[in-house]
Amino acid sequence: VMVKNCQSIVDVVEHPFGNNYYTTATCGGAPYNSTTRHCWASACLGDVPQDPDCFSGEIVPQHGDSEAQVNRVEACAKSLATTWKTYWDFLVCMEASYELRGINATTDCATNSSLDAGAVLSCYDGDAGDAAVAAEAQATFDHDSVPWLLVNGEVVDPDNVTDAVVAAYNGTDLPLGCGTQRAAHVAPL
Image 1 (tube, rainbow, N blue to C red):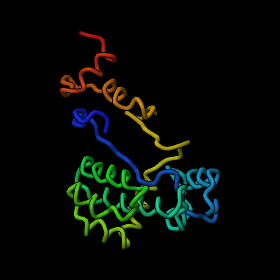
Image 2 (image 1 turned 30 degrees about the horizontal axis):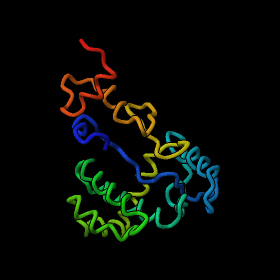
Image 3 (image 1 turned 135 degrees about the vertical axis):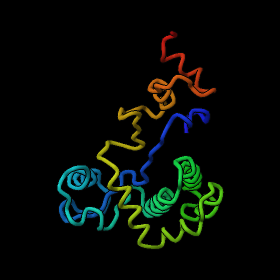
């Protein structure tokens, strides 16, 4: 995440659901269609009345079954991780392995990020996996594309995340290694 030394001043929240959506009677389902995804988001996310099938139908992934599998295992890992940094290590490993190994990278990625691989896989194979995916879906919101990055609620260009974090930092002591970026955003006292 960004500059490694800046991790102590952020709290990262990532939702492994992407541009996916659940099949509903109101909006429809497969094949993937962004109009259907926006319909699902409007009908099911936020403070709107929710259809009973908002988070129980078939998931329609934008990029196929492998994406749905990896998102599910990432949702399980996130639900089991005690810190965002532990989850982030797992996420980065899974995403780096996505093309070649997909879901088969789970054990190695869990072990390398200090997660219990057995617990992650047990979640993935059971009802806890359904609940983890539904929780991530419910935490998303309608968006135009991914990645959709926010810093303190403001949309940020993926290439400028570190600059935005440093500019938003209100603390007095910027961690060593972040100071060179801060100079561009904060006038000297």
